[in-house]
Image: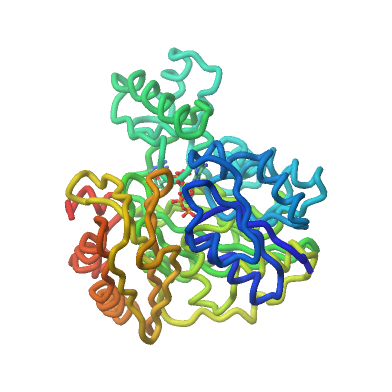
Length: 446
Ligand code: ADP
Ligand code: ADP
Ligand code: MG
C-alpha cells in the first residue's frame, strides 16, 4: 500500500482525499499557496508545505515546486484531484520519472484519452459512436468552412484541451464562424494556455449522461452506473443525479457496454468517467473521457456504497479491484448540487470574502463535502465552488424533497451564494417531471 500521499490540490476535493487516506492509514501531505494557509486541507493533512504565490500557475500548477515538496516530505505518491494538473500527461510522466506514483492512469493513457481530439479518434476506431467533428488545428478558415458545411450547422466550437465548460461556443450559421473561432481561441489561450480548436456537430436537445468506471492494473474493469448531469449553466454542471431518468434498460446497458469497451480499448487504469450525450431519439455519442476523479463522484458513492477515492488509492497501490460487477448494487436515487460563492443577480460573479456564519444541513441521507468553515476567508484566485450537498432517497421524488429541505437549512453568511438559485431549479415543474435538456437553465430563465 502507498505510505504517504501528497495531494496536489485544494478545497473540498483535497479534504475528500485526505479523509480517504486517513481511513486507509496512509500519511498525507497537503500543499498550499500563500492564499490557502488557513484552508481546511492545509489544517487536516499530517503535513503541509507551501508551494508558492496565490496565482495557480505559481502554486497548484507549479510542477517543480510540487515535485520538490513530494521529495522533501518523502511522499511516495501524488493524488492530483480534479482540475489543475489532474489531466496533465507531462506531469504524470514526471512523477513516474521521479519514482512517485501518480494516482491515476498511466501518462500514455492520459495522452490518448485526456484530450478531446485524440480520444475521439481512438473511440471511432473502437466503433463507439462519436459526435461528427473536425480537428481545426493547422487548418485555414477556408478548409474549416468546407468541413463544417459537411457536418451541418449548428456546430460547437471547443478548446481541444478545455474543461469545466470553459472555451465552448455554439455557432448557428457560417457567417458567425470566424468570429466565434477567434473568441474561443482567445478564451482557450487564457484559460488553458493552448488555443487548439475542435469543431463538432451540435447535438440538439441533448442529455448529458456519463458512466463511472474503475479499472485495476490486472485488466479488471467494472462500471458503477451512470450520472445524469444535464442541468448545466454555460456547459458547466450544477446538479448531478443517478439513476438517469431518460435511460431505459436497453439504452442503459448499451452505454455501460460502450464505456467498458472504451476503457479496455486503451488499457485504462484507475477511476475514470466516460461522458456521452444522449439525443431525444435515444442515440448516444461519446463526448469525452475525464481521466481523473470527478466533482460529482459522491453521487455514485452514495448509490453503490463504494468509496471511489479509496479504490483509486488501492488500485495505485497495485491491488486488485475489491468488487465484482455482479456484486454491485444500486440503491435508490441520489442528487448532488454544487454550492458556489457567486452572485446569481450579477451574472454569477464570484463572491470571495469571509464566511461570517455557517449552518450546514444534516439528517438521514444528507452528505456534505466541503472545504469551508465559519470564519474561513474564500480567496479570489480559484474556483468558486464551496461545497457539495449530496442527498439519498428511495426514489427521485423523495430525493428532491430531501434536497429542498437541506438547501433550506443551509446558511452561508458573508458572501453571496447560489443557494436560492438551486432551490428554484429543483422547484421548477419541468425539473420535477424530467422534461428538459441541457438548455434547461436558458429556457426557463430560473
Ligand atoms: P467534472 O468534469 O469533474 O464534472 P468540471 O468540468 O466542473 O467537473 O471541472 C472541475 C474543476 O476542474 C473545475 O474547477 C474546472 O474549472 C476544472 N477543470 C476541469 N477541466 C479542466 C482543464 N482541462 N483545465 C483546467 N481546469 C479544468
Ligand atoms: P468540458 O471538458 O468542459 O466538460 P465537454 O466536451 O464535456 O467539455 O462539454 C461540456 C458540455 O457542453 C456538455 O456536457 C454538453 O452539455 C455541452 N456540449 C458539448 N458538446 C456538445 C455537442 N456537440 N452538442 C451539444 N452540446 C454539447
Ligand atoms: Mg466534460
